[in-house]
Amino acid sequence: MTQNEFMAYELDCIRQAAGRPQASVRPVECSGGIRSRTFVLEGAEGGSFIKCLDAGYHNPPHFYLTLEHEAAGYRLFAPLDDGLAAVPQVHFFQSFPGPQGQELQVLGMTNLETLGSVRAARDVYLDPAVPLERKEAIANLCGRTMARLVSANFQASLDRAAGVAALRDQTSAVFNHPQRQSILSAVENHEALPWAYQNKFIGEMNVLLPHWLELAGRQATPETRAKLDRAGRVLTSHKLLEALSPAQSSDRIIFSPHDRHDGNTLLILDGDEVQQLFEVDMEFWGLETLGRLVGRYAAIQYTTAHNNPLFRPSKTLGTHLMCLLGTFLYHFIRGEKADSPEAVLRAVSVGLAGFHAAIFRLYVAALFPPGAAASVDDALDLLHTPDTFLGLAADYAESRPDDEAEVVLETVGQVWLALRPLAELAAGLLGG
Image 1: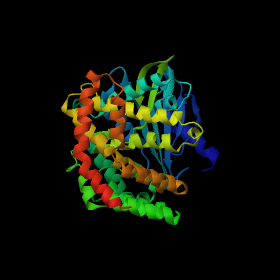
Image 2 (image 1 turned 90 degrees about the vertical axis):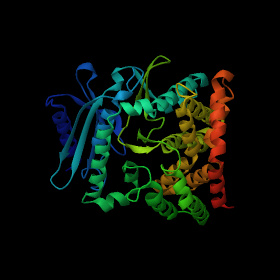
Image 3 (image 1 turned 60 degrees about the horizontal axis):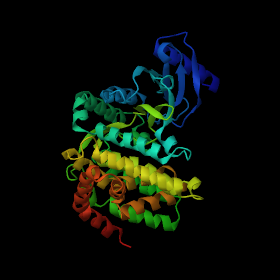
């Protein structure tokens, strides 16, 4: 298809999926993302926000499509809705197969812009005009929402049988795909692969990580390749892999949308007040551990604070981001009842987050080889001090009232001692 033919075809598919052949559809400003294109279908009660994703039209045939999984994710995590935190509702989903194995996926969902002013939590954090106290209140809310997302009560509210069946179908779709080897070879698809924890087929540490190390080193300087070797020595160690596996780490396995970060949390604002919080972009979810979930979340804020060139003339914003990460982690550990056994589990996950954040930074190094040096340095920093995130939570706790912070500080201290042998193992494997 030509560009114009494809655009006309896409609009026709959107109208078919919505069941409204005459509906008005308009592109969203800056709608041409790396993975998808976005539109608004006009209609009653705000219409629908629409994402489109294709294989074989704009993208290569081995581009792994995820919108069906995103629709399933919104349905699975719908019980999150408590009036304040929620996920968008799915209005429609349809897949349109092409004549030569192409596919166009169309997903329609709640149009959040009709609910109020919409801002990503990240945009608020990076706005120097917003007072730190207001940012801390949002980090508090985000931390407590994440704690609820991983809580036993919330997890029990999910349709786990449907979730496991969806994951089984997604795994089968990868293994039975005619372009299977191309899908697995394309590093940009790796984030979408199911079963995030270790298994012999698509395990992150035992299957994908060695591939990332090799990719990141192809264009790297000898110095960066030496650093990659050191990181690989730690993270491909059988001892560390076993220590981080769900059977050994006391790090609970949960259903999680595993690309949680502060850009995927959208706030509905009325002036300065948060009216609702929506978790969006659910295309990547599955069974994983709390440590990996928190590690990936923390890695993004941590590296933004350290590496963003906008912060170099003034360290204030970078310092604020680290404070906000500590705020988030403190309220994540504390949740609604700081003295519950679940707080200990959440603190363990924060203790393991440094290792998972380092793994994520090596994925970024493979995904963007020209910037590999900075990503590898971040990974090594995190491996040298894997308790960084526990420290940030403890630092924030020191600023809280004693009656509130005491239990969190005690829990963090216990986890610190329990995880010390793992930190010493990593230090020994890093060597000089």
